Length: 147
Image (cartoon, rainbow, N blue to C red; front, side, top):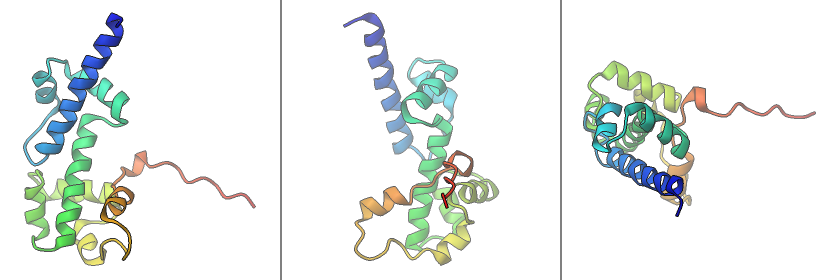
């Protein structure tokens, strides 16, 4: 195996470990510097390679995971919006509400009251994929309809 190929595979393994750590520890205080240092990478290299491999920056991925977890907790309805905010790793209700609104398109309090869950007959795994939050500015632009 050529050296470049071996390095690429090594980087992909490290990137998967970073992604898995974010998935596991999403509620913990995480930052790109700490994630990179744990994998013996510079934060710039980690950010570039993570975006190339997964289509978004580590920070964006973390925010998406936190908001996904928040959406699930809000659907269950057992916790207040403030409790959900802290349960998913945010330290500020204002930041949580801003990020939630940015990704979901409505504030968490509105989401809690308006979301009725997936329509009957749709498997949860499909509903989760379809309902995955996408940053408004990263969402694909609508294609114009032809007359």
